[in-house]
Length: 219
Image 1 (cartoon, helix red, strand yellow):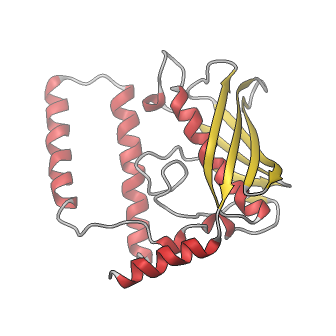
Image 2 (image 1 turned 120 degrees about the horizontal axis):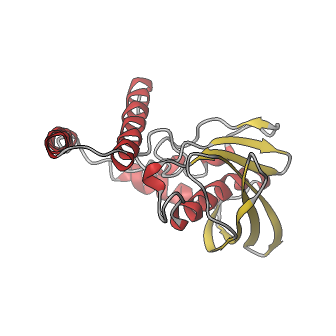
């Protein structure tokens, strides 16, 4: 089932609020009474949302990273619930995405709930960022693929509250395997804090059509 425009906007608002809540909770002290009040309010909200019917991603939206223009510049919204870059995702990083030639560039500032070591991002957040942004490269080379392997080299601590640039691109293709590489650097200094290498495995688009047909048959 496709969400209406008003539902999409409302879900975007809730997703943003949940993200901000997580960072506010992780980044501030609060007394016991305030914490219990917040917990009670959230438990009530959870119960209200659980009254709705179950939802899952519409298979027809898979591969939507290929929708954007072939021209350089900002990329538009793809799947709103996409975990890292989706506007409605409770776990999103709110990246600003651009195409630069054959590369995809994501500008992002990590926040308090992303903290691992003091003042630094958890390494898993960095890995998730690379994995998601690699997905947009598929639109550049017109493929649909799944992550096969992902290797991250952490060169330095990834700071919080500092603008970062994640730049990725496709490399050699061999059969169904597509190699991708990327770097994460601090915008102000140019310091590279992490590098990534990945192998993506292409799939036949008809597989997605089969998923779509199966979902339609079950509704």
